[in-house]
Every structure is written in structure tokens, then in C-alpha cells.
Image (tube, rainbow, N blue to C red; front, top):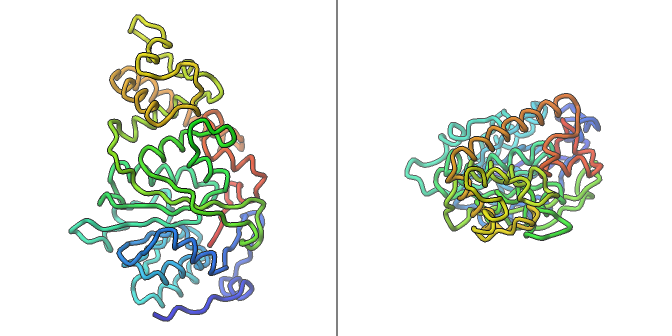
Length: 353
């Protein structure tokens, strides 16, 4: 396979007839040493079907192809990047497919049908240098697929190698009680259904132009143990827990004591959970015990689900009106983008490999 040589930045911009616009917060990652190391986090790809989220100008794409996966599917939304990626696809000996679409809305079942064998048992690896503004919803989407063995994770053998703002990456793997990097709803879900590992840090100086924050790469493997609750149920419970993250959990979980004739402190103590703890202090096992108790009461789950849906709608409304309140009350990981003073934290910002 003869991949064309990587153009210099000026050659790349001329060939695409675009410029790196500050208002789009575009940062190109062109150092092949960095992109090769990124790909090596996944281990050997010779038995894997790879999905790259956001090919950009294609340097990470080239590193993936050098690892010789069984197939590579690249999802790219920005039409200006398509000609360069098409050039790479043409030199890939038919192993790369380019899909013009949005990674948040694409149908992954349909996306993978042309490449995945019907016999099953295949390994799928999602690799992406994620734009900050969609990193959290994308992670939710992929973790849910892994938890439910659906879409690209139908085989039960899917993993993720994703890059986030450094603080977000560190919080994803944060342990209970970490006072510096407080756990969040995303931390709980990622650690419940996957085994996330902080792989390494990409310094901001590796990007052109240079952003104001460093980037952390996280490797997600499927958790070995099956959980007694579903992803959707645990998501509702986690969202409820972290609704007021600085308050004692008994404040957010009061509904669990309704119709029991007991106070919430007694109810939580009965399942071995400290009612005065803050959400960030709870272990995964303790959160699962709370979730199992909640799931045993359909009225509680229905009320919490309705509350979560209402809050989610309000967050979207706030976001669309320019507010910085989206998900701020449950300290979701997307919040740190607005705190970072990063040019990548804009609505339209995209970091590119």
C-alpha cells in the first residue's frame, strides 16, 4: 500500500482551499510520532475493524492504516476535509471507507454492515481525537452501545481510544474521594460498563495552531462483569445523584424513602451506604446498590426519569440561547470545557488530527 506523503501545513491548506479559522478553533495534529503513539494505545489492529471519529486532514487516519486493520471507516462531517481524506482512501488498497456524516447521529448498525462479518466475534475499535464540544455526548453514546451490546458493539468485543481535554480525561478515570478531580455522572457510567485507563498526555504544543490546554488519551475496554442494572437505569440514578454534587446524597435520594415508613438516612444505611456522603465519595458498588433499590420501585424511577428529561430539555434550551448552564448542576464532564479558557470549547470548535 502506497500512502501519499503527508503535505506540509501550507500545502495541506492550499490543497483543501481552506484556512485554519480561529472562530472554528481548528487545531491540526500533524506529527506522525504523536499520531502513531495514539494508535498504539489500542494494541495490534490486525484483527480489528476500526472506526475513526472525525478524520480531519488525515494524519491520524494514516497512522491507523499503517497499523493494517481489517478495515477502517472514517466519519467526517466537515465537507472541506473530504478531498484530502478521499486521497488517503484511494491509496488504502480498499481498506478505508469515507462516510460524510455526523458521528452523533449516524446509524452505526447500517454504518458497519458492509464491513463486519455475519459470523460475529469481530473486534471493533473506535479511535478519535474528539472535538471538546461533543466529547461527552459521544462518550455516552459509545458506552451505551458497549453496555447494551448494540450497533457497533453488537459482538461484545468493542473498545474505544479517545482523546479529551486533559481535565475531562482525568475525571473519567478518577477514583471515589478524589478531591482534586471530582467524579461525575460520566465517570460513574464509564467505570461501570468499561475499564477506562488514562494512557498518556498530548501536549498542546503538538497542535497547530497551539490551543491553551493539553489533551489526555483514554483507552476504554469492556468491563468483565455483567451488571445487575441496565445502562439507562444507572444513567437515571447517576444523574439524580449528581444533581446537587456538593450536597449530601440523602438530599437527592429522598424519594427512595417514600411509602416505606422510614427516613432516607435509615433506608440508605440499610443497604450499606452513608447518607451523609457526597456523590463523588461513593464507590461503584455503593452506587449500584442505590440503583438496585431504586429499580425495585417503579414509581421512583418514573419520577426520576421525568425529572431528568425535564432538566435535559432545559439544559438544551439554555445552551441554544447562549447560556453556559448546560449540565452545570450535575457537574457533567462537558462543563470543564467552559472552565478551561480553551479556544476549542466553542460550540463550533473542532480539534483535528
